[in-house]
Length: 138
Image (cartoon, rainbow, N blue to C red; front, top):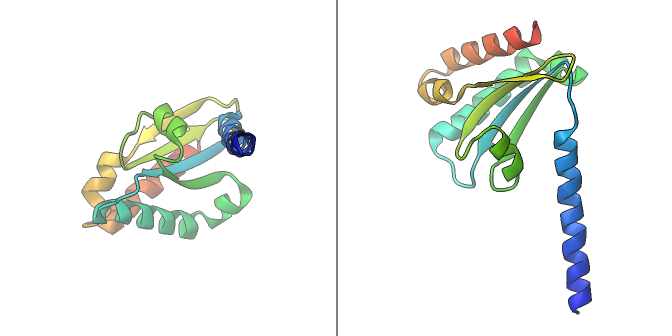
């Protein structure tokens, strides 16, 4: 019984390590939009994710399809390593630009998101779109 449990735990950890390795692979010439969240979210947190996802899927559909842009919604409790990398511990919106050499430049859009996503969604989408376009054109 103990051996069976240990085997199951080892298999589970193996998957986590493989996912972690995939996250750590060098990326190049891509922009990632990462929305971090916890298990419980307020209305503004949900608005940030909803509006960001809508914007990315509508305004950047071609970039999503080609892989030049990636949108991720990440539960901090399920991917603490990635959250630690960007030093986030609560709902956060990070846009990361990887140049052709894999060097990354991250822009934290969290404060902007909390100020605009729920009460000024058009302004929020405009600002996020401008930031993504700037990074895509670098």
